[in-house]
Image 1: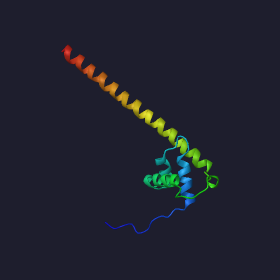
Image 2: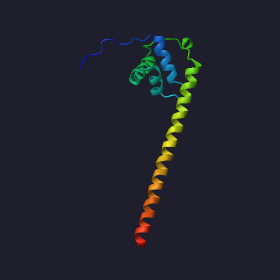
Image 3: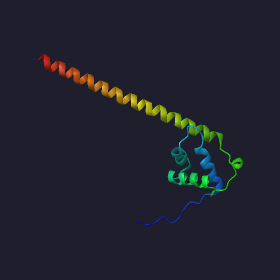
Image 4: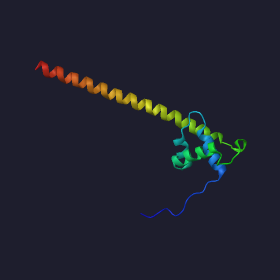
Length: 111
């Protein structure tokens, strides 16, 4: 297997902005990583480096595009709704299977 020869280099401002996006309430780091097309482990490492002071960026210089912030919040809301619908669907499937089994047993016992 060939090794990757080209690596992306990110400046401290980009890293600090990515970390700031993860600090938005209701936004998961995995969503930020997907949106920025980076691996989530890299994002977690940047968060650790920010805590240690290895990434130097002033908080006041970090600007988050309001559209990106709104989009991440909307994505999180849609994912919660989707998960709820999946749970409801699974419960309905179980209820239908249960009622079909009961119906099948009642017709078999009457014959």
